[in-house]
Image 1 (cartoon, helix red, strand yellow):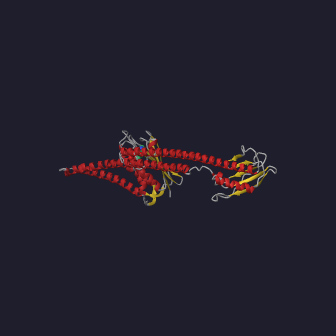
Image 2 (image 1 turned 120 degrees about the vertical axis):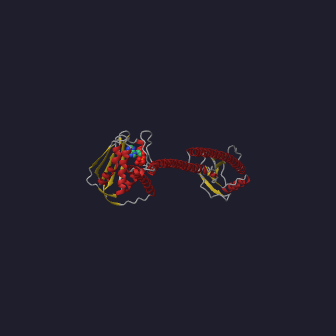
Image 3 (image 1 turned 30 degrees about the vertical axis):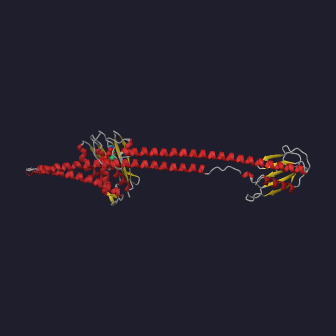
Length: 439
Ligand code: ADP
C-alpha cells in the first residue's frame, strides 16, 4: 500500500471512529433525558392518582363518620374528623363506641360507591383501654396479595377513633428502566472493542508498510550487489573473446582470474540469500559434531586477511580459551565467525584494527570480535540483529549489503543454544561477543 493511501485510510477510519463515539454519546444522553422525562411524567401521574385516591377515601370516610354521628344522635362537629396519617393510613375520630360489623358494612358500602377498589384493614381504638379493640382485613380486590399487618399507629388524640389501612397502597414506586445502566456499559464495551480493533489494524498496516519498504530496499540492494560481478564477468569475457588474446597467455590468466573471483562473489551472495530462505522455512538442520573453534577462527582470519591488508589494517587473535572444542555445526559456526570478521573489516573504513579473542566462559566459550570502525548508534543497536536492517549510512561509508548477516548470525547462535551481545560507540568501534556452550 502506498503511503498516501495508508494516510487516507487512517484519516477516514479516525473520522468514522470519532463519528461513532460522538453519535454514541449523543444517543446515550438523549436516551437518558427521555428516561428522566418519562420518570418525571410517571411521578406526576402517580401524584395525581394518589391525590385523587386520598380525596375519595377522605370523602368516603367523612360520610361514614357523618352516618355514625347520626346513628348515635351525636351533634358533634365533624370538622377535621378524617385525618391522613400516612400515605396509606387514615384515622377518623368518633366520639363514641362503635360496633365493628356496622363500621365494616358502612366502609364497604362507601368505598364501593366511591370506586375505592382496594383491600383494607380497619381497627377501632378504645381510649379507655388505650388499645385497638377490633380489627379486620377486608379483601375487596381479590387480585391483590393477602393482608399485611397494619401499623398499630396510635393517634395522639383522646377519645375513640378508627383507623383504615390500605396494605397494597405502598407498592407505588417508580421503576427506573434497567436499560439505562446496562445500555451505558454495553455501548462503552462496544466502543472499547472497536478502539482496540482500530489500534490493532493501524499497527498491522504500519508494520506491513515497514516490511514492504524493507523488502523493496532488500531487492534494490540485492540487484545492485549482483549487478557488479555480473558486469565485471561480462567485461572480462568480452576481453577474452577479442581476437589476438590467445597470443597473450598472461592476459588470459589475468581475466580468467577476475571471472573466477567475481563468480565466487556471486556464489557467496546467492548463498547468503539461500541461507535466508532456509531460515524463513523455520527448519534449521544442524549437522552437529566436535568442532575446533580456534581452528575455525584461524581459517576465517586467513580468508579475511587479504581484504584487511588492502585497507592497511591488521587482524590480531588472542585465543585464550582452554576448552575450545565444542559440539556444533562446522559450516554455520564458520559462517558466524566469518560474518563478524567481515563486518568488522567492512565497517572500518581506515586501517582497521580487528581483534578476535576467546575465553573460557561459564560452561562454554566466548568469542569476541572487536574493531575500531564507525561504530553503531544507540538507536540502531536495538535493531542490528533484525532481518534486512542496515544502519542508514549516508555519506560516511558506502558498503553494500543485504542487512542479513547479523540476523543470520543471531539465529544460528541461538540454534546452538548460545547468546550474542554487542557493545558499540559511534566513531570508536564495535565489539560483538558470542557465547557458545560446550555441549
Ligand atoms: P550488512 O552488513 O549486509 O548490511 P548485517 O546484518 O551484517 O548486514 O549488519 C547490519 C548493519 O549493522 C550493517 O548495515 C551495519 O550498518 C551495522 N554493522 C554490522 N557490523 C558492524 C560493525 N562491526 N561496525 C559498525 N556497524 C556494523
